[in-house]
Length: 426
Ligand SMILES: Cc1ncc(COP(=O)(O)O)c(C=O)c1O
Image (cartoon, rainbow, N blue to C red):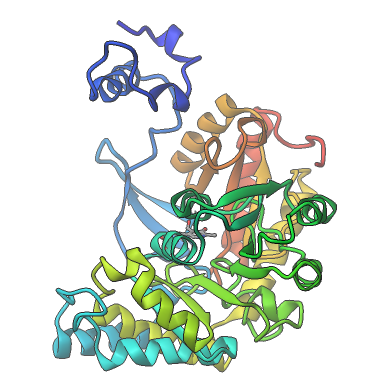
């Protein structure tokens, strides 16, 4: 029997392995026992429901059934495209014509002309020859990496890359090297040591890092990749539509549009839909269609989603999705948070971390902020190291200045109570 006191020191990773003499499902029972003690574990808010189209003031339904309004600072739909009228209308029309699901994998009659139009739209956006759209973002990373890399190859990762990248690396069987986040010196040290005959080399980086909101040093990575004959893959999930002079992402920001080998991104964040893509050469796309198992063995995204995404790319291409308003809101939010003394890191995107450094406090903040009318996500292990735990604020284009100010005032009042203002700047 686990008491409330005992459960405080219990950690996420305690429930990964089956204990000696334990039934395979025993760990699930142990988790259940801990959660039933009612101790704050950070799970209290998980699984709540959103009761409307995601928007700056959304209604959420807590697990106990209580519904209330929150200022939404926890959505990756930065540009509010998931509820854009033109996007919704396109999705409705496609539902009428093609139905709501595909019923087949892409290679076996699971795609419509709308799907192919989407791939060509994305290829054009990145100035590549072709593009392949996967059913999920997670599956894009696991599929692309495990298709192209294998035993004998080497993959070099930034330590802050997304979990799906690391999972893809593990799945590939390739040798995996990791350099500390953003440390180009260490990246070069790894590259120097690769034996000459190990020629299958891939550097992978997030474009915008999903937990810190900062950008990869893509200019330097590109230079090193040239010098050491490596291919480059960029996961620009959080850069698409947000970063770069026309919103074409981190590659555009560094003048490298058309020069990245594997332009991976997610259709679930800025575009507000579902799926992921890899824009690359014709040969690589063709190869991925055959060898990426998360593509070959998984049903295509529904036509209504593909149709909505085509509208999204129209808006993105014309830079009419509201990027500048999003940037204005982000600058305003950061300015207010800095004025209040919060440690917000060095992000250059619509992701704004508010460092907390104490998991117990983090869980309390999550609960109190939500109940006081502000929804923010929390991030701790396994997404980041526990001692670097933080609130993760996501800005949306449609937030008003008044809503941003109101949210910061609430975060400040509650943050003050837990001494998370005026923490050291990392
Ligand atoms: C950088 C990055 N890559 C990949 C993914 C996975 O994308 P999806 O949620 O569309 O599966 C995410 C989502 O959390 C992400 O932040």
